Length: 46
Image (cartoon, rainbow, N blue to C red):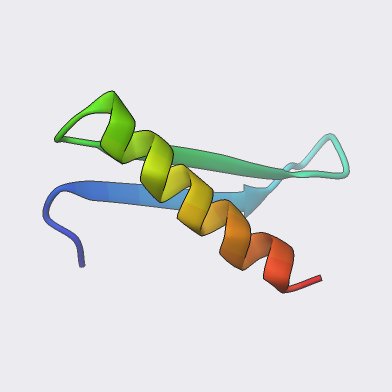
C-alpha cells in the first residue's frame, strides 16, 4: 500500500493489450517515474 501513488493494470476486454492507470499525489514527474518503473516490471515479465 502506497500513500502517495497507486496504479492498476488490467487486460483490455476488446483489444490485445494491457491498460495501465497510474496516479501520483505528488507531481507529474513522480507519476512519470513510477509509470516507467511499472512498465519496466511488466516488460521484464515477457
